[in-house]
Image 1: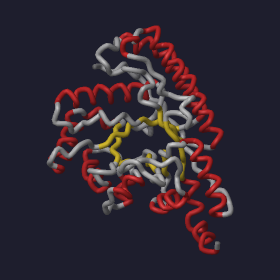
Image 2: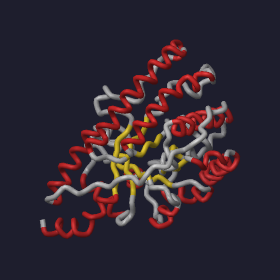
Image 3: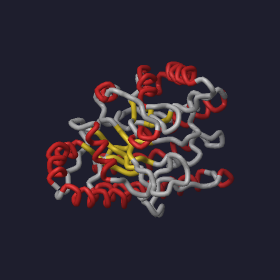
Image 4: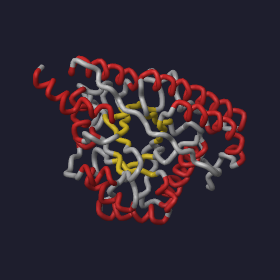
Length: 326
């Protein structure tokens, strides 16, 4: 206990600099920002109904986050189903604006940071042109949605580097080239280390093109490298860093699988790495908001007192948003 007390004296106050959050839905999936429809049933009426439902649940999830004292939430990428698909009419973006304007006010009054993380099919360094084209379309949709929701520059869109395709250095160079060919990506794109191919050191090298680095603690444990914390923090400029954390399950079914819960020692370890820095952390445990509640309780038992969590600075509204041009 004496050692833990000293640990609290060293780390405890740093918890005040950490904002936590979860992603997309409640643990049971009943409240979700990823309600969808089939491509066959895609029409304006069904789209408005689905996005309205996602919006209603989004507000509920913001309320849950607020009740727990959380400061960041990851919005589901399927919030507007098939938004980057060729069957999606450009006029529908205009029809959706009233819904998004209302949600923008809900976000603003709660002060919770909103970010997004597209699926693995977004691969900017792919050697296949059609994959790159579709990836850019998907990212344009994500950027547009965050703009319409009034989310400031802290609302990043997180991606992985992609594959190595037999030549890791060339793959890194290709990613950089794609960003330079599409400088609009620098407005919101952020790059995360992964569990197999690209370490924190790798993504820091790529980030020199002008991208912030999202540190994933679990991925770093599985795919480690040396890196400079000050160098990583510098990639964020005036924005608040978004990091990710999870723990391995007791009996993993596959490499890199996320566990149901977040281990206290992992959380304390990550906070210790970045002590003194203001950070937001998405908890990627499968039990989502329940895992965060459990973490709070276990931190109280671990330290004998519940650490105070951090908050988000004032938001700056983004103006003059336009439909994405596909």
